[in-house]
Length: 417
Image 1 (cartoon, rainbow, N blue to C red):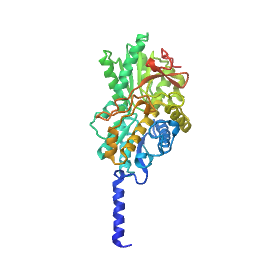
Image 2 (image 1 turned 90 degrees about the vertical axis):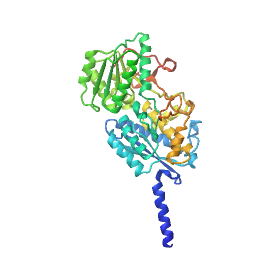
Image 3 (image 1 turned 135 degrees about the horizontal axis):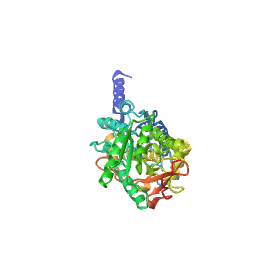
Image 4 (image 1 turned 120 degrees about the vertical axis):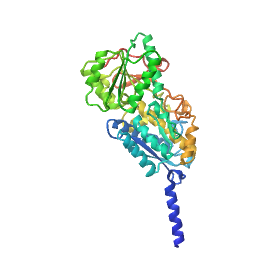
């Protein structure tokens, strides 16, 4: 082999390495970088999400005829890329925005991922998606609800989940409905941590109630991953609001439940904004002393044999847990991203971006109760939707509102323990 030939081969190899995510998937593997809290106060969420993504990649990479016409399930691999397999590379954000940002940079520049997915906490999603925007890499978020994430003028950011403004309207309508049935809902308190998620969602909810002529009676903020919440619970006990809306991650949600019990405090209505209250770790640790807590959700298992029921069973076999709303939204978002890559027929970022913009999935193509998936110019799914569930009968949530989709009637007042 002469020197000229060797030089040519080296140059070709260097070009291939430099292309990274811009190259076609000739190696039959599509790398997707996933940024999750695998350690810290919300590590249980990361563990559940990891199990969910393992199920999702199994469905994508192998044929699953039992799922009927569910997108990506009929064939093995991404047919648009010649049967390429999806490979998930998980990075731990530790629940820290700066750490998440560094992980996003590493996944893009070192692992050469085709797209990014994550990052659970809104504050971490804020920083990780900024790195993706800088490098022109598609970023799909499935669970962060802070409204401002899609207000930054980003071109590479897409979000499938309903957002804080959607849920704020649901809370207003739900409370108005149960008030008409005799529940007392005249004064509302907000309890939230000091993260991007807690602060922004609290502001959005407060704005929604103010528009309806019902200003928030009490705003209780606290430091995330708190070790003592007696002061906050005593504030609530002193002011006696009719409704308490909780915006908390897992460890704080558990501590609030235990502190409320120790101080014998029960509001008439306790309504959670998903997050920690949807985590199976919460229901195991504090479910029996939080009976009657309302929560928001977009997840319904569906009838036996449906795609959603089959996927929920696959997830339970993998994780040992029932599928919750957060996990379901994460899986759905991942399927949307994989579907876009498949339709793009390439791992070139601009082609994936174009495919995401063209997404138009119908309800029967989803595993979750959205009206569909279709992104607006800001990257927000305009067909995302949600409902109200309630913790009844131990550790199980059931749908209670709206009435047309309810499994059971709402249980009032809040029972607790």
